[in-house]
Length: 67
Image (cartoon, rainbow, N blue to C red; front, side, top):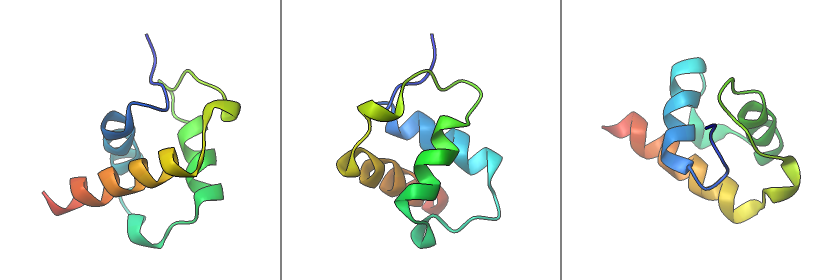
């Protein structure tokens, strides 16, 4: 079973592994959405995504970096 938009922490971990050079505080939501959709284990559609979901993923990614 693949990742869905609601799996913000798991998505953030995958993004952190795939894009270690990216500062999650500096990303725009268009790029973030494209990167999530391109993840190998992601299994959802762009239509199920909104700004609040992208904000949650971004915050989880920031939090992941701070740990």
